[in-house]
Length: 236
Image (cartoon, rainbow, N blue to C red):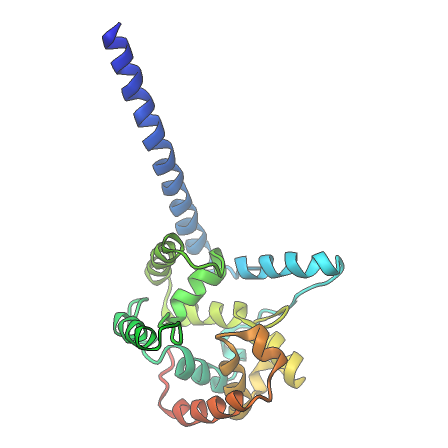
């Protein structure tokens, strides 16, 4: 009887521990396989796109996102340089996570007593956009790191940047460089000028807010700063 009870306790302990672990591992395998598929196939949507579409459709069931995929060579180098200058100056050098930038952001946030700097790389942002949500938690951040290194394992920097440019959010219901260029400037992404590109790049940390406040004083100051930095931005 005692042996039987001990066996049952051991059995249920393994079940309680093993099932969650197996579930987490299966999720990681799914992410890993999906990223491998995207090496040669373009994502048709992202987690952020699906989440925002669901929110918008609560108000208007017929609403559609603005999104159009274009290849890397049909996106202006001005926009590529502007985004690297604004979001991730060391994109071509790091292996997915810029630990120095994270440390600087942490120190800056600690001094200010609030979050004023992120430190996330382009690859980290892509990991979050493709699979996760905007909610902040230690678990989500850990998952973001894992997916980031999966992206860097499977893909060249140019491919990571190409996907990022096509799925990143530029305003309410506006995703990707081509949709943003057409929506804000009525031109294709290939024709973006330096100032136009810099202004789009400035929107990225808070695209829904800046999409509705594109002429704010902050936008003007930040755009001028990005324009000065663009010349030294290294493209992958």
